Image (cartoon, rainbow, N blue to C red; front, side):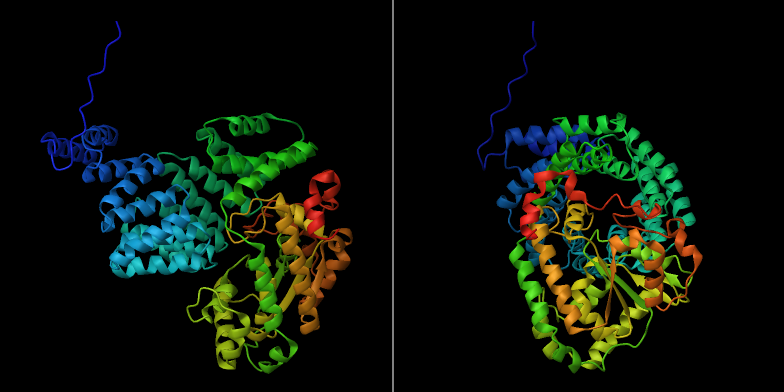
Length: 603
């Protein structure tokens, strides 16, 4: 005979509390403090069955759900609580955290802003706001929020670590290293800070130290899957592809549900058949329990792997789905790009540029390598950085941040207005600041590269801040560039146009028009390098490239793929291979599927 469950108590009317509730909440709190979160959560559920609006049970139950990795459940309870108690800053702070963990970054930002309007002296809320801002790629704003948290509570290890991560993404690895060390000094057992320390050492070009820290993390972590993945990522950055693949596989074996780990393994493995790794990704993709975020990563991984084996139609279906899922997470309007490009062209005229011709730092250290993403910028930087006189700096947001500082706190500004109010002394000071921060990467290299593709938007500012800098523009066939973008998952959130064929084509057309403007407004300042020419006649093109940079020829440049430096871009695996031309003529693989792109490019 089936045992019947005891009847659930009827909910009490407001104002008529059950006398058992305080005792139950006290028991739940004691269990939570004793590490028995699951049992404490059951008691909170029982309290809410008696009184669905019991505030302490809602808040404690939400906190338990966050501990258990259930942010949506936590959000539901905290939404109820904040409706009941709209002035409850602690509940608003926790709701912001729950939204962030659920990937609902805009809602997290809104609720945390509301929280901070009630309580400006709330370090946890500033820290959580920083996390929400970082989730949408606004690392400079995130860093400001973390610094506000630390001003209120200097001994706040999570905020130190989060600030260090933001600084790492902002291209400030030396500061990131210091921040990770501060977090560890406050909490030596903080594994997240140990991982940040390894990443900062990696970015500073200290691979053996980074690997040693990662190996320590593996030994200390109760769930070493993420540590194996972090170690593999460092090895990938330095071209140790076999070792990286081995550690990605170890990570996946321990925690097979991480779509991102499968995607990264697929990026560095050249598949030649429908192997077990492809089938594993496909099963995980098709599983009803796989979250959308993981399915997005799996889509890009499956697309790449199936492309390897020539299953182009199937691969394209996965690329479409991965891009659809990524695009759904982003807010982007092509009209915003139209306005930005028009503003730049209107602002940076030959007459305007000549007005400040005496401004800027005369330093010749920076070599800017720029262009559209996937246009060969990583390859060109790797070639230049193979010369002993050059330090490869990788990608920064440094120039963008310095230019943004001229906006006087404006979230968005027009360059046309900006140039009317900025003077030569400000431009010179900013140029000097750029060089000083760039020099943190090397004090003795003759040249240091800044390979941030999007700096093509700022060529006019480069001329004003650093008139003697070298600017290398990487050109590649428009269709090949655009398709390569479409087939790539970008970790940075800034490339919001990159997940729809028509939007990519539209943006590429704006880019081509702007580059024509720069060549007209600044004749001779920008040196073009053709990707197709470089892979077709490497010696001739590489010699011309080095000569333009003022560098003599060195035979080691021919072995650029063996240069041991950290490459932390989507091309980190490709630049470790000798020159190849298999990325030319991509459209032929996909037939009519690329029609929206061709229409946007007027092809």
